Image (cartoon, rainbow, N blue to C red; front, side, top):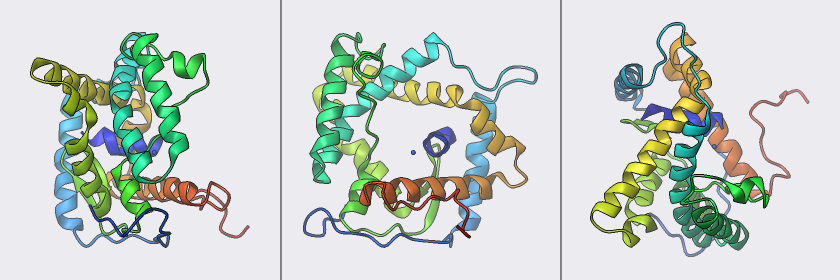
Amino acid sequence: MLGKGLCGAVITAVALGGCGVQTPQPSGIDDPYESSNRSIHAFNKGFDEVVFKAPPGKPRSIDNRFTRSVSNVGSNLGLPGKVVNSVLQGRPEPAVKNTFRFLLNSTIGIAGIFDPAGAAFGLPAEYTDFGETLAVWGVHEGSYVELPFYGPSTTRDAIGTAVDIVMNPVGSVFRGSDAVGATTAQVAGKAADRKIYGDAVESILYDSADSYAQARLLYLQNRRYHLAGQENNDADAWDPYSDPDN
């Protein structure tokens, strides 16, 4: 769904012989597929309008106990994949933190419905994915692309998304109806995120003069900022919102 890429921005295959390779930070916008990207964006926007867009007069964001619980369950099921990616990146600290978070929320938090790891133990989720793993391995960003349902991405992150789906440890543990239930919970979690951050997402999609250009800019800014912060331990991270004259 389109909200996946945008929520990541509103909130964030090729091994080159080991981890820790510094990839030069890209700049500008490389969008050679703009025509087809805009067609996919129109499809995604139409899907969002039918499934998620708030009716006139209704709140765009729905952040209550139910949506938070659904979001928590989906996010919890995504933690094992984040642990694997942190290990592949040679970053043991976030791997350990996400492991403890998963264990706490899966048990005390009743399968992730609640978030005692964050609320009581100060263990927020450490976000990462295989697109970031590729960046750590030295794979360049590539061109901007928009994926059906998933929304804004790049060629590197599109490969990362596909690998994350295939190597998701949850899919290896569960079988049959349990696997279907786990997958359904993760999809429902993404849908809940879309409603929780509905105001920000809908302001981009429906209030912008050019929602495609706005979504593209926001995604690239936030993705590059996140990756720069990870590579430089946040010390010299490029802030897309800073004053260029300072």
